[in-house]
Image (cartoon, rainbow, N blue to C red):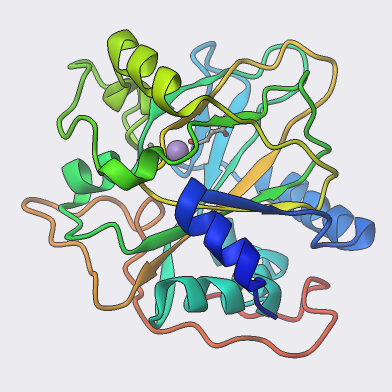
Length: 271
Ligand code: HL5
Ligand code: SIN
Ligand code: MN
């Protein structure tokens, strides 16, 4: 399974492309169930909102839940990613941003590669992000907003922009947030776009595209799963202690496509 030429062109030009309803409602339900199970497991990999209670994000679920282990090797995801990068790939990061109804927090304007360069000394932006909608995404529940084409100019800022880390476990977009003046200029040049769609839709997006999202004040959850694949030859070269394996996976073994359906029904192995 691959993207069409037009979809591939859109990814390169605009920095993201949406594939509607790539996964069926049954597959989505299986992933949600898996997330419910995984969300119960305490540990550092589970990041909470500032109130100390609601779950903000959960990392590395593909290490604990077979459905997610299968998802990372799903042909509809891994096929396009390998093609976009023209390389063998492994999972650099796996996270689910929970953004629950009635108060799930927002994510500041940022570029992902800035975080990975600062925190992991990652050599190049040779990655592809894959966002999987676990809920219907609408204008109400805090969709991700992209600045189309902003990936083409590289990093806007390369250092931390906030000195107090918001999270002890990972770099929060707050720590590398773009400045208001950056956003004024970027929006004037490129405009903005926020893909909406049914649960099961997927966004492929560039590691250097500027993006962020507002809090979720709606009564609808907005769970977003994000898989980040890295070119196996682009290993991080941490200057100090490497970050925990649940934030930045160390296993760089090239992923092989699982070719049998139903791959999301729990037949995968941990990766
Ligand atoms: N939380 C990630 C990390 O690597 C970085 C963010 O959206 C990706 C900016 O710590
Ligand atoms: C992100 O940048 O990782 C996430 C944005 C979001 O979940 O809205
Ligand atoms: Mn991001």
